[in-house]
Image 1 (cartoon, rainbow, N blue to C red):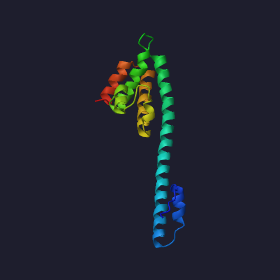
Image 2: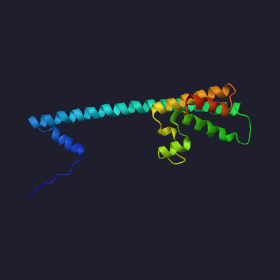
Image 3: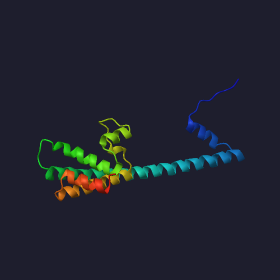
Image 4: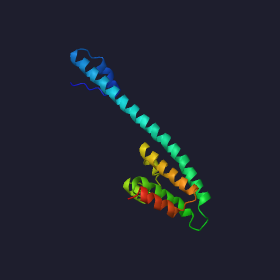
Length: 157
């Protein structure tokens, strides 16, 4: 009595695109406008993600140079291995006002999750800048305490 046809969205679109008349034309125009709008948003998201990934790669290189600077400039002690975490916390504190543990809590991440993979392009640039500054101070012979004091006076409230 009431025939029913099952179709997916693509089938519906094909069917409706075959309709004619004033109302059908309005629907088709709105559909095309919505599709074009969605395409523009996807392109923007893609561009943002590409920018973020580029900054992430640059940040990895800066991070490597910082860890090398720690390895070369921090004296050998039983606690040297903590310096990597301490300098990372210092960079995060400088940029975000929080250490790694606080950042993980703030972003609802587990201990094993990569915090930097959650940063946007601007945040990655800021962390990269902070780590570059820290590396520069290490290369000039400053200790962790010196770098922490300098950054605290300049950036950390």
